[in-house]
Length: 337
Ligand code: PEP
Ligand code: MN
Image (spheres, protein in one colour):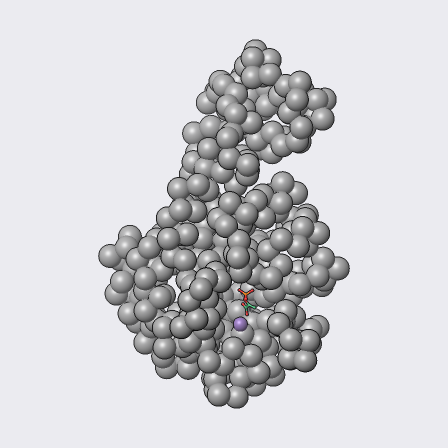
């Protein structure tokens, strides 16, 4: 349920509504819109009536939200949410491109990848320091050392950092070096981890689970929002289907579907979405045409020697070409790059 405050409601009236709903055992979430303030009510609503809320001064109306995700729903907030990461905002006219290697391997590799990505116009550096690998025998990441390299290289190249956190216990550590947390596909329903990043005050990139429906994905976002962190960006990275010609099936229809249901920004990962560098440029352009707010692309200075995801990583010159094409495409899609 949401309580829509009248345009001229006072701060005092808003506080009174918050106090009343807290007395009823509910958590109020204030969502400031352009024209109005809305208070989202989360918790067990038995015993709460719309009529009661509508008698309170300053309340315009109380509206039940039908979707199971309340705070992530477009019914709660119509205007698109903009999430600030460093100097850029995701969810506005600007297309935001995150690029870099799958994993941080060494200072040399990361600096080389980051310099070419930044020169081509990427704003955010990606790179895993903690890698959730399918096999326990595969490279697991440089951990703390990788985080330090990310922060150093990002500073040197004028970028921000997005990097994956795989355990709730590491949220504080990763937050010391990253500008944005990445929650990987395999952890989309790790509820303890979602709650922990929800309590953190840094933006979160929430990847779609390998076999998650859009509703399950938005419910995962709801876990983060319900802890008070509203800076969530969704990331479509392909889902598992019967098709084996690509690593995953990139579900680009999720872009308009999510935009119809939620105010949260959405970006697309064509690297994991296809699993092959050959398809990355085509699907990046398709994602922008579908209305994505940005992209996250794997780029490696020498994909043949990459310790993970080399086959889906673009060489720097291929990435630069893609960025040039996106610069032409962006204005036709109402975007800037
Ligand atoms: C990654 O970004 O390198 C990654 C592991 O992604 P996903 O969680 O989407 O598989
Ligand atoms: Mn990867």
